[in-house]
Length: 74
Image (cartoon, rainbow, N blue to C red):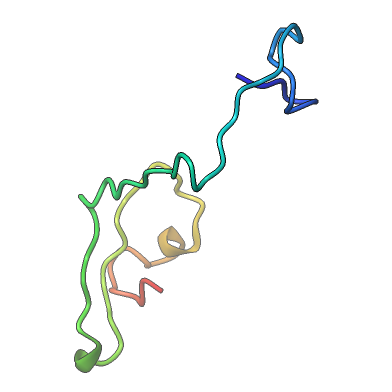
């Protein structure tokens, strides 16, 4: 690991940190957690959906009667 202040030094400051360019070792990206995802058909007009109840109840979707009426998720 590299040191957060000087990225060319190791975390304990004893060695030069090893690093690779993105072309030498490209990053891998993974798509995860599609359990709550929904696909909307653009031909159906404006998408409407009921808000998914999460842990944070202060978001605008949960204010007033937001849970009883579908709203635009975007």
